[in-house]
Amino acid sequence: MNPKLIDLRSDVKTLPTEEMLDAIREAKLGDSKTGEDPTVNRLEAMAAEMFGKEAALLLISGTMANLAAMMSHIAPGSSYAVDAEAHVYFYENAHSAVAGTKPIIFRSCKGLIEPEEVSRTIEDSGKKPGLLWLENTHNRGGGRIIPMEMNRRFFELAKNRGMKIHVDGARIFNAAAASGTPVSKFGACTDSIMFCLSKSLCCPLGSVLCGDADFIERARGFMGRFGGGMRQAGVIAAPGIVALTTMIERLKEDHMLARRLAEKVGEMPGLSVEMETVETNMVSVDFDSSVHRLEEWTETFKEQGVLVSSYSPSKMRMVTHRHHSAEIIEEAAWRMRTAAEKLCG
Ligand SMILES: Cc1ncc(COP(=O)(O)O)c(C=O)c1O
Image (cartoon, rainbow, N blue to C red; front, side, top):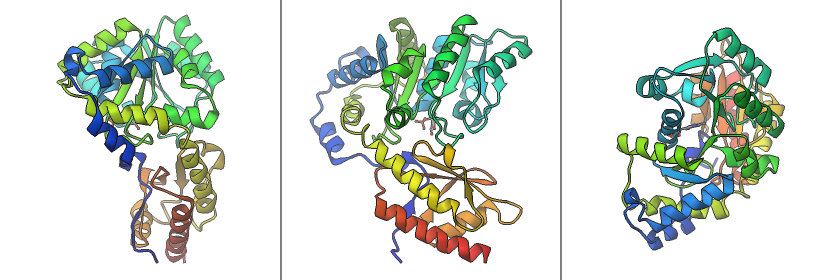
């Protein structure tokens, strides 16, 4: 057995490419807090153009970009409509703790929900939320894509109700690559959209928020107040430019590997995968936790040299990215099959 660990926990574990490291060394730098870093300015202009927006802003993380977006759209005390499974609601506490905004919660099923149901939830709440919050691809939905036609209906819903619409597009390039849709089309269905450079695009850090010029100016103000204003941030922007020019098409390889992995894992004893949910680089794996607990699964896999993460006590998550090849995925599947046979007898 190859003793080297195979890490399927997350695409945030990816490392920068050689080209990115070269770009960092060669980047022209300046004080980005005063708009003088040419590399940051270039990345922001590039992102704005790709998403069809007036402006963009480079921030240190997805969490900060989402928080700045929320606070730039709605004031403390206001409400926003959000999925109970959305990253921002499920994992982050920043919106209630820092922005002082109140969630009106709708419930998606495997990352998807009909706009009419969201409308009904808003009606039933008796409130007038100022913002509709979506996530595409949907992390806890197993990397699902909100289809374009549904994005258009969400946009219509938001406009009819006088709401802004923000998309947490941490992995929007996965949605774009998998569906063959340019990100400008996703951008056209939003008031603002955030994407992460540091996930499957493999940059060491950084996220970019896109929107109209006034919105981005407000977001820039919040970023400063959070202590997120940066100086020579060209070192973050330079690999970001490499990512936007070289790393998008290759995401299709991650998606192919995820499907291959899903097919194999779904056939293992004690495990099941709903193949229709495997649209991008994530695989959501179900098991009966009354038979074997999550820790038993993850520990047995680890003993065989495979690391996985989880969504819940009865659902594991496996993520493919650029450090995986077809051979590595075959090897991971072989190791996990050995582990599953051991565990399930
Ligand atoms: C959908 C989604 N949004 C936002 C974030 C937050 O990004 P960051 O870790 O850069 O703060 C994550 C992180 O995993 C995410 O999956």
